[in-house]
Image: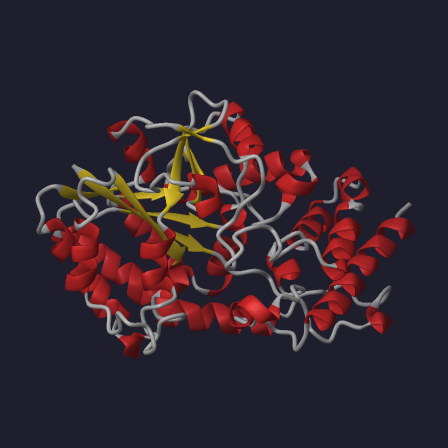
Length: 396
């Protein structure tokens, strides 16, 4: 039996006021663009979350639980849904009640904390675990780090925290000659299973679906299901991981993406040797075929699939150093509002907006980016962090 593991990332940051200037430091402690955050959350809810959640509910009902999916919803997107679009949250709760959906654990603030503060990382993971339990009634056993950032060391930490499955990018430089279509085990881990994204099949939907210059355009559910079926004999679990906003936002409704998704499960399940499973079930259903050694960090971002979307240029490194330098003093205040404000500044998107790799992935980095240039993003961000730093000094 060959399984399809379908996973969606759901995340939106709290964007900062793009006109927060040097002259606001010390006088304006309201950092976020509430109007823009509401506008974007409403737009995505209308175009993606509501129609796609409704479609998934109908598919789960149609196939009597044989169709299954999994989600990782960042803590800050959950907060925005609670604030702006509670009807979307109700739909996610309905999905949880079907028993055909698994909710994964990640960092609450969708941060890069594993790279800069293990203490903060573990605290965010616990906060997110608590939020998922509170909203959906389940304690996650599967972990995915922010933007699938992964290496051997992360896997070992996650294993010690009691998780049983972890997700990562099936990058060529990690796999070598191996196929992503099997269950693996991280190096030096013995209780943790590893699921690797099949990026070719995932990106056919997420990025190439509406590309008229793509030789396979237009992609039909029949053809895609055939590609899936043709993996028989070369895999056990096919991991299709992508942004949830693929449906209706990255790929507009006019492209036929919803109709494609409506038909796809039937086409895949038409072959009796194929099934849908969740990451938790993958661990139960299969045994690891080998250990994967990943000494260097990888991610699912950009063509490089490394960390350079968020770290490495002078803007990003200076901003990250400044933000994490405040951790000790912020937490010492025990002021939960201040701690929360600081943590929202750790969200990876802030540093993504500072990326200067326009030559390779410029269009991706401009998506829902409120800034004209990476330098504008840096200036606004450092102004905000400097205000927070000044506030801390004034409090002694």
